[in-house]
Length: 148
Image 1 (cartoon, rainbow, N blue to C red):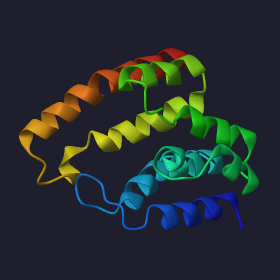
Image 2: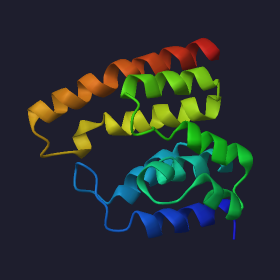
Image 3: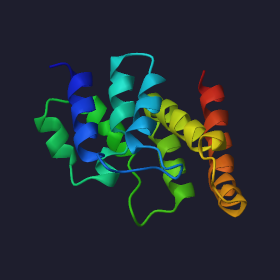
Image 4: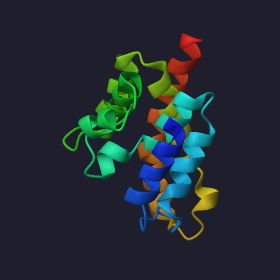
């Protein structure tokens, strides 16, 4: 089984029955981020970017399943610790100098900021999410453009 197939199997198992704010299966979000990957490694990381944050799986579990050190390290960078503010979390991604983590987080946030897929989201919630995500997204984009 390829790494991408293994990643897909994991997210299907661990995100089964979970839904996003738009009441879409959460798996669709992971598939979207994965689809933006420019190679197999990025596609795997896109699928697994929330696996450590939202499931009982650990870095060691991912290593035992055969995922490379780079993939596991990048997923760890993309995992927000519970006691860290969102802004500090974004800063830590930038400070990591991991271009793959930066790219995947940008794609993740683009999907999170696409309110057309969340039809019945109250305007106050849209404003809250925009306030939370937009400045951090802009910070990531600026870093991405400066690195290229």
